[in-house]
Image 1 (tube, rainbow, N blue to C red):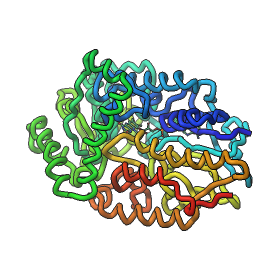
Image 2 (cartoon, helix red, strand yellow; image 1 turned 180 degrees about the horizontal axis):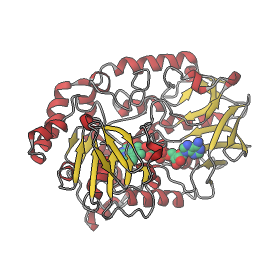
Image 3 (cartoon, protein in one colour; image 1 turned 180 degrees about the vertical axis):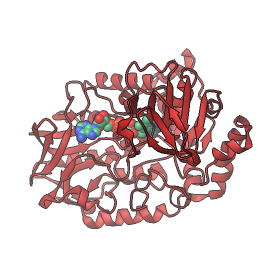
Image 4 (spheres, rainbow, N blue to C red; image 1 turned 120 degrees about the vertical axis):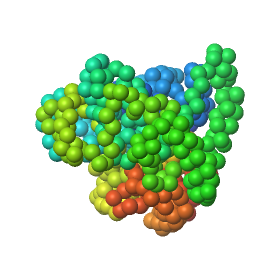
Amino acid sequence: MHNIIIIGTGFGGISAAIKLNQRGIHDFIMLERRSFFGGTWMQNRYPGAAVDVPSPLYSVEGEPYPWTRLFAKRNELEAYTAHLVEKHQLNEKIKLNAEVKQAKWMDDHWQLTLKDGQVLQARTVINATGPLSTPVVPEFEGKDDFEGQSFHCNDWPDNLDLQDKKVAIIGSGASAIQIIPAIVEKVKKLHVFQRTPHWVIPRFDPKFPKWIQKLLSVKWLYGLIKRAIYVHYEVRVLAFKYSKFLLTVVGQGPANRLLKKQVPDEAFRKTLTPDFVIGCKRILISNTYFPALQKDNVSFHDKSSGIKRITKTGIVTSKDESLDVDVIVYATGYDAADSLISYEVRGRHNIALADQWSEYPRAYLGTSVPNFPNFFVVTGPNTGIGHTSAIYVIESQMRYIMQCVEKLQTPGVNSIEPTEYAEEQYTQMIHKEMERTVWHYGGCQSWYQNKSGKVIAMFPGFTFVFRHKCRNFKQDAHLIS
Ligand SMILES: Cc1cc2nc3c(=O)[nH]c(=O)nc-3n(C[C@H](O)[C@H](O)[C@H](O)COP(=O)(O)OP(=O)(O)OC[C@H]3O[C@@H](n4cnc5c(N)ncnc54)[C@H](O)[C@@H]3O)c2cc1C
């Protein structure tokens, strides 16, 4: 029996492991379904992959790193992840190729069943399986008939050579706008399929000279820089939640100016202009996306010439145009709202988490769930952010999770879970606050919402407020036995 099992080895799992080590709790293991550890940045190997939050902010607390530019590219994030794993000796804790298929509460512990049939037991489970970890590909007619190469950008094949290939990329979101400029010069032909345009703002991405990199290695200075960037980005919540005027002037202004500057053709500009308020969907940052779309070898297909069906050799558009393609890239996103946890979870009285969440996912502090004792969901319901680092939120959750874990180390304490009342009150507060945000009123459909239409992915407010709530453990909000 393990004391704690962490499921997932991305920044969520790694942060949990570091915090446990810091508390002297070493009897834990980490399960990873893939053949390598590291989550998002080890998995996403598509060309152009990079973070869209400044790297000093998108990093683990107390773990400075000499980033070579403001927005690190994937390979640096991969190196950073590997550095953390090595520094904290997590390799010995990680079990690879260990996909959890079921977690079942057995009255005083969790029983985890893996894909290969192995059964593991733990008193506590920290689920860190990632909000954007399981890709989604829509059911296009004829999708399986295609005889060329096709894949979700999350599963970019190693050594894929796109030189002189005819490529179709489906999607125009955060991943697509990084991939398109990175491959456009290489391919013979690029078909871009846009369902919805996104607001794009300029990317200010300076390279750091050696002396700045040296400064970034100094822990206290790194902390200061991180805080300064944090404040700079946090101010955006004022616009997202409290001021449509600010959103339009400070957000939509630069986006419109970028579009006007980079896309001279008025009709094309119209096609690329969203019909929702900026911020309703994730704001994208790029200086190279619009110029790439206007290259001679690019054909742009908006909703009016979308995908009718996929054939053996390519794509037929809704205008009955047949396009010959060698490769189809699905940059079609993730299901972060409905499939928050990809395996079966059964709590007290055999209650299925999927049933408890049948209307929409909900959790106390986005982390713990009534009837599911000793079970913590990292990046759970309503913990997402559109303006700052996901790692900041993960580390806020850790403040709550670690307090619970510490209580569970006390002799005589076997289980901890939030009361139904506390969870209900918290969830009501979240959705009431949400009504004031652009994610609610902004006029878009996004992966922030689940099938009920409720915004499930986002925290409706300042992240320091969320952190404060997580730090402030409320005994009377919990059943401790
Ligand atoms: C392309 C991309 C770009 C992003 N860019 C940013 C950004 O710029 N800024 C930002 O703040 N956030 C960004 N994100 C969000 C990102 O999800 C978070 O920043 C962060 O990496 C989440 O870490 P995590 O550990 O929760 O999840 P992940 O990094 O996704 O790790 C989850 C791990 O759990 C494993 N796992 C899943 N299910 C199981 C199972 N059943 N059994 C065992 N293991 C399992 C997965 O294989 C994976 O390794 C981005 C996400 C993507 C996909």
